[in-house]
Length: 218
Image (cartoon, rainbow, N blue to C red; front, side):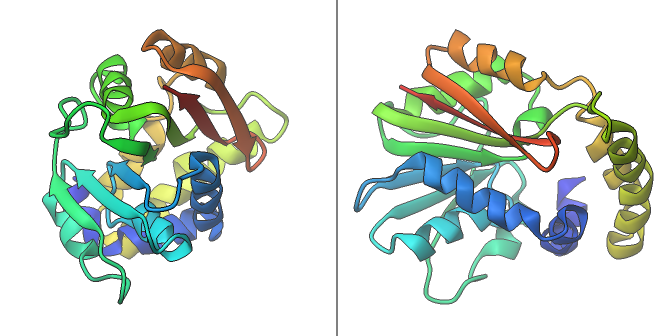
C-alpha cells in the first residue's frame, strides 16, 4: 500500500495537515537536542522529511533513514540537493544497527502501523546511546473534545476523498484514518514508552489534541 502511494505521499501529507506537518517535524527535532556531529536515525522515514530537515538545521550531523518500503525511500533519494540522507531498507521490529549507535531516534506517523508496538519501541531504545532521545510524532485516536466530531468527519470522509483524487488510491487513505482508532491515547503511549525502559517520558499535543509528540530518554 505504501509503495503505491509513494509518488504522492509528500503532497498528501501537506494537504491533509494544512502544511502543519513540516512544523511538527521541526519541533520533533527540537526535542532531539542533537549534539554537534550527532547521529540521527529516522525509522519509518518515508521519503526522508525528518532526516533532511535535521541536515538542514545541523549540517554536521549524520542522518540515517530506514523504512520497510523501498519505494518510499527511492522517491526521497536526492530530494533536497546538497543534503545526503543514508537510506536503508529495514524492519522497525528488528533494526539492523548495533546497540548504542545513535544520539536520537525519531519516527513520524509510524507507530500506529507496526504489528508490535512494544518491540518497535524497544528497538528504538536499544540503538540510542545512554542519554539519547526517542521522539515520536503520531496522530492521536479520534478525539472526544468539542472539535472531535469535526475532526473525525474530516479525517474519515474528506481525507479518503482527497487521497483518492490525488493518488488514485482511495483505499490507502481510508486505511490511514482507521489505523488511529485502536492506537493508544497519548497517556497510554507514554506508559508504553516507559515500559521499555525509557525515562523522563512526556508528550505535547498539537492541532487541538489531534497530534502528539512523545519524548523519552535512555
